[in-house]
Amino acid sequence: MVVLLAGLQAIPGEIYEAATVDGAVGRQRFWYITLPLLKPIAMISVLLASINAFNYFTIPWILTRGGPAGATNVLPIYTYTIGFVGGDFSFAATMAVIMFIFILIAGSLYLWQYLRETEASGQTV
Image (cartoon, rainbow, N blue to C red; front, side):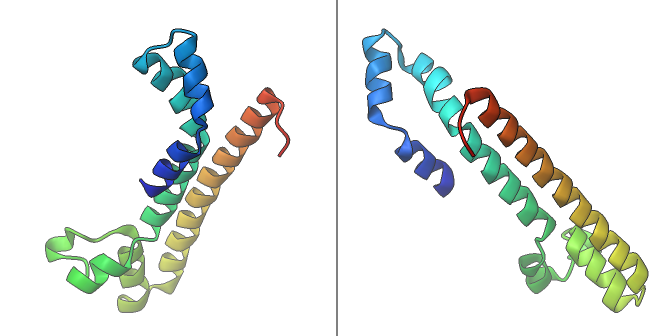
């Protein structure tokens, strides 16, 4: 939310003033100015949040160690349990590599989308 707030504050007020002079009402300014200008920031926020979700280990481990009946057993805790408690390091390493591949694919899709949008708008990277 802090990143989105910073993105909102970075939008110049002159754009909103020009839209108001052109006759745009609040909803139109939101849909045609605010959302398109916040899209790159929102995309990077979603990417970082998803990467963080794949690495979410500390709080559930400290509080519940996977929880009652695995209720808070997230993927990193399961990988740790398989590897270090169960002793099956090869399966745990395979799970870690698969998590890395998912994160790599998500980052690559973001980069592809970002480069496609910057080429379409004529901006330089």
